Length: 188
Image 1 (cartoon, rainbow, N blue to C red):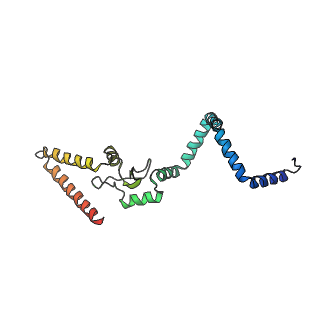
Image 2 (cartoon, rainbow, N blue to C red):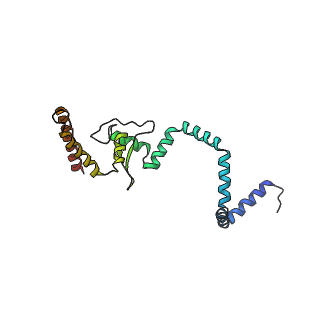
Image 3 (cartoon, helix red, strand yellow):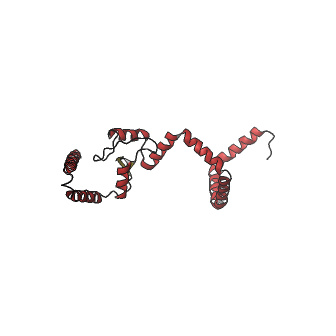
């Protein structure tokens, strides 16, 4: 059917697609499935030809939206919004979540290392990069961490004659950590 008026032709097309929506959806899905390789090939060719253009667009967008890109990564990886991230850091008074460390943690550059449980996918807190790395290397094993702590206590006995002040400081720190652990257990 030929139309003299372009508007009338458009109206007919809209009415046809509205009346045959389900039929067209089934046909389009079947077409996409049967021509998947052709479509992928076209996409790859386009991406190859326009790779520099797409890369420059991506760099420009990232430069203009660094904070948004960072918050998007945090949201996707840890399910934390920017406000939740900042409130978590404020709750820890800007310090590493490891009370024995106490390093300052900043949200800048790559951002603060967010500690999370890989099994249940839940955020535990914010650690400094050293503590986060150590926890990862020890595979979040409390037994490995306690074993290393016991090892350090045993090893420090040999230095008792040479370093009495350092040992006193370390035992005071350990007592402080033990009291913090007891407080935490009472709170839970």
